[in-house]
Image (cartoon, rainbow, N blue to C red; front, side):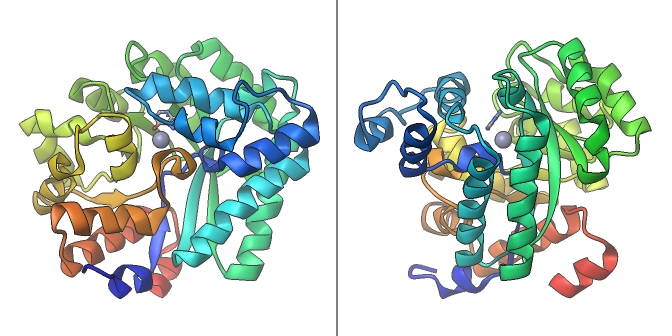
Length: 326
Ligand code: HPA
Ligand code: ZN
């Protein structure tokens, strides 16, 4: 799998992607200029040099600062369109992407501006590249549950255009249970729910996401490896984990790719999938994540094919559309 046509040709689905995390440095500077937003870095090279993270929070500080250049609907369109071009290159056939409305509405950007720009690009991407899509509204877990409720109220006129709910941002000290009531409300609205858990936080947070939030997928979830009972539960139920290998090494969840546990989880029967998380910040899009597993974990073609099939199983596509992709 060295110079890999297999990976390039493998149809893929991406289920764990923050659209704000696809903001490449060049576009960040272009939008900063267009909108007159000051940035603390003099140029693209010094911004890239700052991508030397030692944990999730050190990344988040930079990621929220970068997102401040996104102002107009066209900005959100340009951001999302650039991501979809990468998807087309990497043979990604379907995407289920997160957006963080609170990152923008807190700066006075209207909800409709954010949603409108992202959605218009997704529609254009479906027409141009045939990439199907779902949109997942994520709550920031470092904020309060009351603020999540306020965001949900703000999203109410748009809920027919939102396909699910997620939970992201700093995990430590912000357990899933903090959002149990707002998640119950989202489920009553008929929205499927997912949550980041077990990235930096303990396996116990994964149990909380399952028991208190009733999630249909766990984002990351690699710390499940610390809890044999949880591993058995995940293998038995096939509750999916959306794993992000390059993200995990960049944020020091694993000190090097050779120590990543995703292939062990796969061989233990879990429904693990491969995703890029915040590819502009973590060094690569979908093919790069698959390639890292081949290069540094010795993943076989069979394993990579199963990881891709797991994503079909884990997706929110209809059975008919799943059949079309397999
Ligand atoms: N973890 C938590 N929150 C995030 C991430 C992540 O990897 N990316 C963007 N927000
Ligand atoms: Zn994430």
